[in-house]
Picture 1: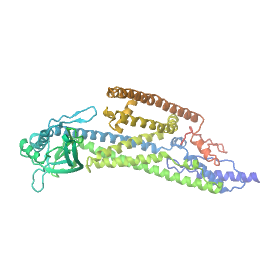
Picture 2: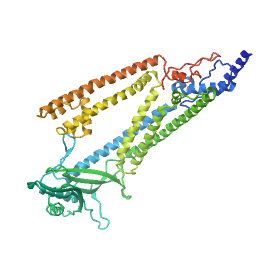
Picture 3: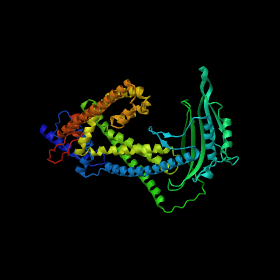
Length: 579
């Protein structure tokens, strides 16, 4: 009787599993990938139990399979991989076009900065010192202060007459005359100093006074007289002087059509060191403005128009593909959650136990979370880029767009490791990275503590003797460059002080730094990666992978591939892989 009942139940379960095996995979399929039966007994179990168990087994098996295994079994096209390849191609193309436009705009702004500096600043030379800072004229005499300011103001008002560039001024709507530049002087609230008596009375609160100086008469001497009226009588407590000028211009060679731009020019004289020398600086920023609606532009060819339209089409395609991939990811996450609830309910009802932590976390696919973040960065960067190309906003969004766009491209390229890991050869390399990364990060935590000790020690000792150690950030960059073998001789030469103690300490300091971080740290990291490679190769040869983990996590379901009792030849996976 038991033999007949067992045979009857086995036949019913096989027929039911053939019609209810469901594929929970990256692709939306309704047909079962696996038709598998197992020998069962009827003692203490009902037909519904065996039916539910067989259905859950098929669902979990399909969940643990990768798209290439499903393609071998059914020939189903891995759409996520195809869409991801298209997204990388179009996104990279958009980045290249955006980068070219940004470089062109930056080169034009640099040219405007240099040309306006030559026109407005006396003895202007855009040289760069060893620290990478532009060297501008310094002022050491009171007469030179008034002459420097007068030179700037007179040449500003004569800019449209003397310059060959395309410049104009903002007009006062009431008087229809050129808006006067603003000159602001910052100085201490009180600074009574008597050096001969070593006596002083200083209140360091900063008072700011702004003036409008009209030097449109094209006479430096007359302008200098007006400037002397507003400059302080004594420069004790003088902090800085700033002249702000607004200039209009039209960029003819940046975009596919001329663009109207407002340039904010600022000249600053700084006396923060109070050492008898005033340092000058010159800055230029730009802001897009709407051109007059009566302006006309006829291009020599339609190439620029086609380039602009092509960029817009590529950007829209990236946004559309990003939406498709995001939809597929959220669809998979929803199916995974349904499978998790199904598995948890089955174990709770039939095995009277909750899922373990390992069994619960196996439903979390961290690649999906990463892909969602990558799509979010892509969508934001493309939206800003489209608005930027449409001249909605200002140039200050240019760097934000570049950062988001570069981050999105980098994240999408890294996401390609997910698909490479489905192939056995690349799988071992990806597994090596995943195994070695935790140990390397823990090792870096130890190294950072030592590195910070070198940073603070180097900063406090060498800051007065080398600009490379002027700040904590600069010291960090200098030590990192030394570890990589850059600027070793220059750094040694700058610390070559006559002080024997300092010279000896610097040699010991730099030798220890280079030996520890160049040889010891690098050797340990290579050793950690080598050990991880051995573990990955051993795991791959032993077949320890996704299917093995599945069998270990759900022992009651016996998820391994087996031939059915009918002798059907269900192909084994090409390989095992780790989630």
